[in-house]
Each structure stands twice: as C-alpha cells, then as structure tokens.
Image 1: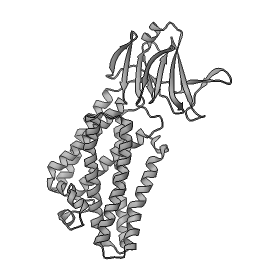
Image 2 (image 1 turned 180 degrees about the vertical axis):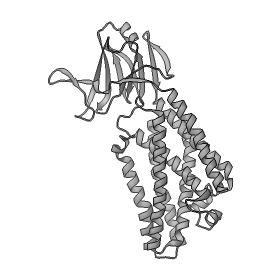
Image 3 (image 1 turned 90 degrees about the vertical axis):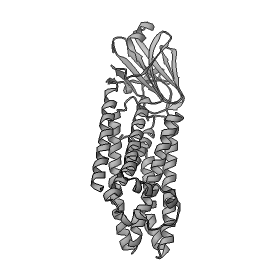
Length: 387
C-alpha cells in the first residue's frame, strides 16, 4: 500500500508540474536587453544627470531613463513601477502605480507621438527610493491587457501578474496533492486532520500505533508538508526582496526554486528527526519521540492545509494585493510555529513522567531554537537576493 501510494504521489506531482512549467515558459516575454543600469538622477550640485546606483546614497525622488530614437526600433520597453510611483514620458503623465505594476510600451509608437531624438522616461516616487528599478527591451507582449491612452497603445500588467500566476499554479498543485492524499488514504488523512486530537490530550491512536516516522504512508504526508511549506517560504523570500518586481521573474525558474526549497525543508525534516532521537537518547526520553513526531506533524500539516485553502479564498475570492498577502503569510507562519511549540510542550509535559527540566531542554533545542533561527534566516534580505 505504501509503495503504491509513494509512486502515485510522485506521478501526481510530475503530472501537475510538467504541464505547468511548459505553460509558464510558453507565455513569457523575450527580453532582448536589460536597461536597469541606465537610470539617472539629477544632481543639484553639478546640475546634471548622473548614473543611478541602487542602494547608494539616501535615495532619490525621481529617476530618468533616456532612450534614443535609433536604439531599439521595432521593439517594446517594459518598466516595472514600484508601489507609490508615477511615470512620465516626454514630460507627460503616463500612469501611476499604487500596488506595483509592469508597463509595456511600443517604442515606435512612442516616437511617432513624441517628435524627439531622445525620449525621457521619468519615474517619480512618493518617498525617497534607493532600490532597483527594472527596465528592459522586449520582443513579445506575453498576453497582457491592451488599452488606449492619448492615442498611444499601452500594454499594462497590473498587480505583479507574472508572480501572481506562479502563486496560483503553486496553490493549485498544492490543492491537487492534498486531494490525491485525501482519496488515496482517507483514513490516515482524517487522523492528521482531526482537530480534536490537535488540541486534546496526547493519546495513543492508530496514527501512532501503526505509523512509522519518515517511512511508508507517513513519509508522503511529510513530503506534502515540505511542498506546502516550501511554497510559502519561497513566496515570503521573493516578496521580501527590496524593490521586488516581476519584470525579471521567470516562472519556470520560480517553480524550480520552490522545489529546491521544498527539498531543503524535506532534508531538514530528516536531520531534525535525527537530532530529536539523539537528544531523547541522551536525556532518556525515548518514549516521547513518537508522540513528538506525530503530534508536531499533525499540527503542521493541518495548519498548512487550512492555510492553503484560505490562500485560495484570499487571492481568488477577494483578490487581495500580493504585498498584503505577504504580510498575512509571514505573520501566519510565525503564529503557527509558536502555537505548535506551545501545544507540543503541553502534550509532552503532561504525558511524560520525567523531570520537567529535561523535557523543556529537549523541546527548546529541537523546536524553539530551529524556529528562531528559521525566522532570522527568512527576515535576512540577503538570502532573498539568491532567488
């Protein structure tokens, strides 16, 4: 049963991931050239435009990008506006962004409207800005929405649509994985989703009697936990980038990064369980290993599954902005981590007849310290630059 369940789970993941990756790659824009390093700002001291370097200085209120008429004929330019910014082209208002958006313009159309040899793209910020401002030359429009403004054809992609598509695909894959496990092993799925056992006293149920930590059917649920947690961690890390944008975001690379983080989480689960077994052996607490493993996984899996469906409702039903979703996600995972530690502590302290100081030392080392270190890593913006 467990071997067929593992084979089925792998087949479901491949069936969901391969078409998703192909669909993502087929609809992306072809970038010819990055213009990120060509932004300038006006220096009051020398009264001239000087190159803008992100992260250097106190920040600027306005940035300017000059494009010559003969540079990029027959192409389009994409400018990623950060939240709270306004775009001017040739001195005329050309759009604003409250939550962030990509603006794509046909260069030939621009120069047919503005009779200049060099056209200035100016971005003005509500507050001083010191982050990167992605801009690039494209050849393909990538299914964006078209609209007319001042006789100029403009293609607008609002609300970080490229990254939103990745989140949608990730959530759908997560829901598909959950549905597969629900159908393949409904009884064990019910044991993990039993909210009464989560908040009740620890007791020996079928999940603990017949279950084998990190083996058989229970390994599939650990893989599900790693897959969902990897998705949410990647969302937090990418949305946490200073001045993040989707103009340089590649969906296939995003899926690979997500799977890489999920694999790291899975490997960490094995290492963490090995650490727990070692600590329990040193402190003579071997009786609590199985309770610790299954109770902690029950809480994590239940919380992640519930939040997956909640995310679907928030993003699909209410259409909340990704920046708002990022804040909700970070706070929710932090609360889940500390509530899990609290519930596990109560369960093991009430179950074990051993000295409380041993139990507390064991739980702090195996649960609390990893949570604090994990939060420090997540909040460290330098890690997000690798994604």
